[in-house]
Image (cartoon, rainbow, N blue to C red):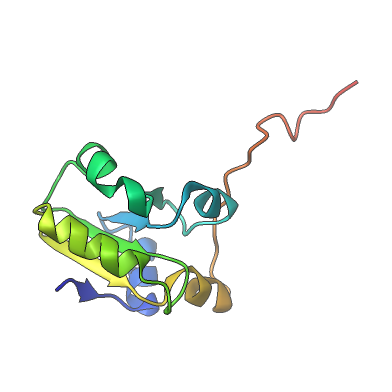
Length: 120
């Protein structure tokens, strides 16, 4: 069973610049709307396809998260990754809602790269 990580621990890892992969286990649209800083997206239905490509080091620390404490996507992803041979997986069970509720920053993917360009 994968270990858990608390918000405070995750924030400290980010602030220290620790080497680990932060993975949002929600669909692409939810990821694009907002995700934790430097997180990559691994949608639940694509774990088997994408994990070997985007997470090539099976011994690297991987922190997975989803929407909230009631969301099971990160726990399911953690189990799937463990079954694939990943050895150091942590589940941030509080998820994106816990992060945002405590005033911590998120990043967004702008669908319109030209949105800041002025038009004439």
